[in-house]
Length: 130
Image 1 (cartoon, rainbow, N blue to C red):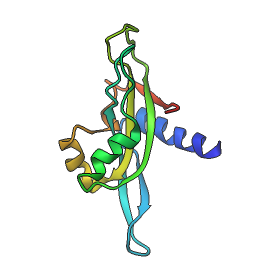
Image 2 (cartoon, rainbow, N blue to C red):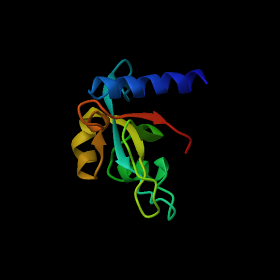
Image 3 (cartoon, one colour):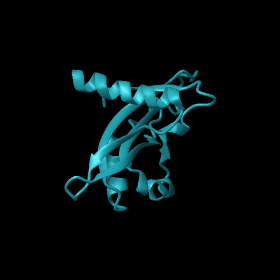
């Protein structure tokens, strides 16, 4: 429970500050650290028609392109109006923590930094059950 609250705090803080959250992850060299950031991608769910892709599925897209995934989450965008209507997209996305050095490769696959969520800070997001 404490871990979920801590991760939620990190995600919300990163969103409200409008800059990509960063953390330190251990690299393969002892004592070395790697700058990380969070990227997101729409999970492609369509209301009343199909469930979205799981975080494991979109993490595999990254891994298949030699991008190590440190952590993955199901996330719901909040702070924006969205129609509830069959056939429309929903506001669910998948968020992955990766090495900052891999951002260019991730963007080529359609992933964007979480700092890009929102317009003038009006959108935020929250963790949800997958």
